[in-house]
Length: 100
Image 1 (cartoon, rainbow, N blue to C red):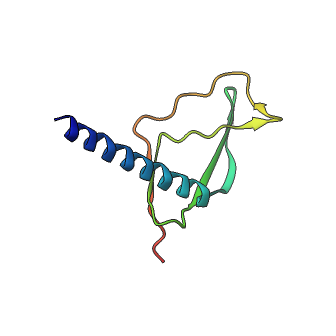
Image 2: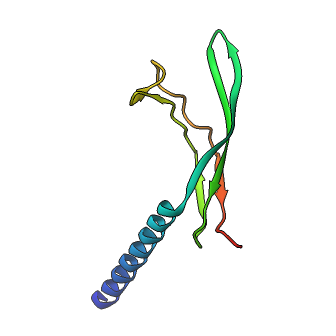
């Protein structure tokens, strides 16, 4: 039983290391750029920006981005004096691998 447990733990460790290396590869190669940034609305509550993101993933691995958050910063600090709202529940972006 101890031998079986050792094999299972070893296999889990190898699988985890492979996954981490794939994530590092995707992180190094993925490029994100803003497309069509614009002012969405202006009201007494403040100024709302709207933009689209272009995610270029040239690696063979696919990525799922869950609950994406965009932070607006000015001079290294937050651009507003209050905490940002929580991300929308259930928001998932799918970034497939490059196929061509």
